[in-house]
Length: 441
Image 1 (cartoon, rainbow, N blue to C red):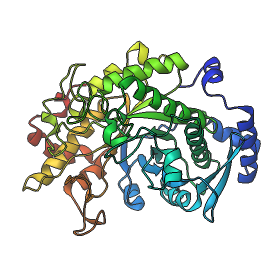
Image 2 (image 1 turned 90 degrees about the horizontal axis):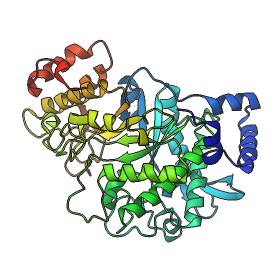
Image 3 (image 1 turned 180 degrees about the vertical axis):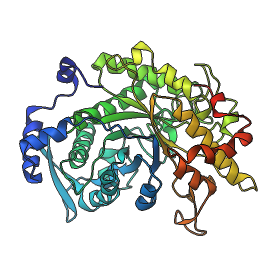
Image 4 (image 1 turned 120 degrees about the vertical axis):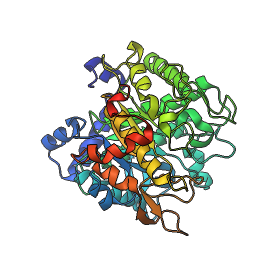
């Protein structure tokens, strides 16, 4: 959806200085003004299918016929407080910023072959601790505390927010289409499962209203920086499967029901000047270790359901049609940016995993509001709490080196092709239905 002129002026029109800097960048990139304007105004792609993957092996992903891909970006690893022998200088907001040349090059190597293959690439923006005080003080939220994997972005200080926006501007410019050698990113997912922030977007002990406010600042900064270089690049909020429930075992100031977080975010965004944001949902099964997601007891057809899983995706799609959640009179878009089905260590484990994928694919296919199903993982990962979510197994003794393809691999490859119906039919008796038409829409 395209912003109205008045709303663009309020929320997303770049400052004149940013326009000047962008023009200088275009001269360096060798684009004419007309070519630059064309790149800037290109609409968000409409690929022919919803199949996607969090990619580990690019050639294999392309062979699988995916149309969407998600790539992690560690902004702490990219940022440098001072120049050194491995930095790129980037001018933004009348200030020089320094970014890691080698890390940016590593992102190029992942993104370019995917975008060259006409795959829509989404960046998952993260802040891992670097354990270097100078960097972490600027990049990580000052209230982040305790045992966490990923911190919230530092939106609490003027320096932190300005730095964050400059880094996003660097990435948005580099992957805007102005630099073919780098590739192109269309979607920007801000943080990870922010409603369960204890582990995945740590903000320490923080009331819901404050957590929403801090996150809204990060999403708005991302949107504004991306729109400096792309009129139709999209930003997404990241949520897990807890809907009216919270992550168990943590306090009410460390995790929040997605529905409450979403409603407060939408209300605050309107108060501050609404802008275009969308949803990146993770509809894992109730029990991540149980592949029988079609039986999830906590995923009910009610708006008050504790969880949103593959079983009741239609609840989320219907909820997003409420007037107060619309953007330009249309529902905001949904992508499923991270989810997978576990393979049990049993004789039926591989067939249950494949059946879980077949069920997930058929559910997603019935929801026009969902643009992408981005599967996690490509290859099993040894440090994922015993979960085996991959299309491939990992080699014994390695973290994520591919070993052998599971039955889910061929089923995944056939999704979105003429081979799908015959291949997926074997899942019907496992799930306990006679036809996929029995699924709710």
